[in-house]
Image 1 (spheres, rainbow, N blue to C red):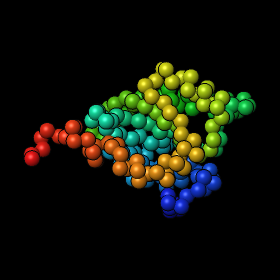
Image 2: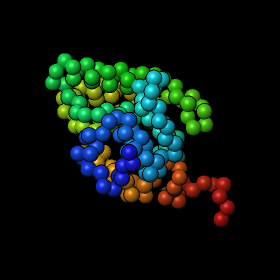
Image 3: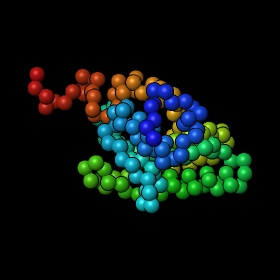
Length: 179
């Protein structure tokens, strides 16, 4: 399957299997936006993340993030839903306790964690998950509407300073450059 991000709809995003969402939408999107390093980690040894990304922040400090992908809606209306949320929290906990190899093979801990779902997330489920946030450096949730918005403003995101591939801040110019 070859997905055209320019014409993707919310309905199409909602219908994708996790493997297709990961390999045909999220990974190409992250690469297109300009993250320095994007690695597919899905599998038996994923340690709570499906995708590992690296980027530099606005102060040129290298940061590492994990992304957990979910398909469908996330809510806590039933015991089954609550168990799914508890699995998300266990995955998040595992991710923050695990050292991951960076692009230069250095073992690092995550600075942050994104949960991306191809569905919606109820306010009560989001609150339940985010209650754990004080225990971790950074946690955020991206639902299908937010993901759709990111996909359609990826050109402007690429033009912002994300990562070290571009540097639109002359004050942070590499001092090794010659004039």
